[in-house]
Image (cartoon, one colour):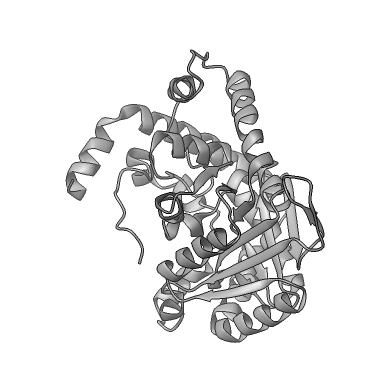
Length: 336
């Protein structure tokens, strides 16, 4: 389908426009309240300076991060492109005899079309973020960086879950959440690999930082004996102290919160048990550092500014065009 037809189809869906506009109207004052008592312009400048330094030192920071994370027991794989990243994760699962993979929300994995690739390899891949699971069941792509299913009504979700349950579920949020929790909990308990993204990667300590609002992130990164992090090179920062201004800005701009429900810092491997109760001395931690064009962007004086993005989606939340067509209407060409 052509881009024009995709846009025309999206414009005809007034329900999506209504939902996005209603959210945008409430978002602006909520964000202002979240920043009350904070100097937003100063914070933004501080984050911009950290990101600018990181972009200018990207290769140096990648080498430092690799060294420190490896020293603490992690395995770091430098993926030049999407195909290398996908193949590494698939081979890792194959070599460990893994059949079920649970995933925490990760835009980097969406970028490389990881789910469809692993499913083609015969793996059961399950999104565990509620919005991402809804999108996976519906066969769509995420429509928003932070709230992937924002364009769907609770009636649509109830219909989707009813098909999954084999019985009619009422469009009541509490009932739908309870159903999702029961379904996903079994997947967590039976999965041998968890895949997550990361909001930051600290070169100084080899630490990955993950911000989430649902407990699924913690379950994905702790229950399975193998944890894979897919993180873009642009998420690197030089020092552990550099995460503080990002933690100030990201939740306030993304969801108008002072802080997300869960802030997880993972540095190296930890003791773990597999799903059958067999004790392993160390849990496996694999970190896929993804380039996929980022180095070329960093070398370009214009495009390098895009690498400063912290993925808060504040720009989408106030965009008149996005409010009319959403973010799920345009088809993507598979990453290579």
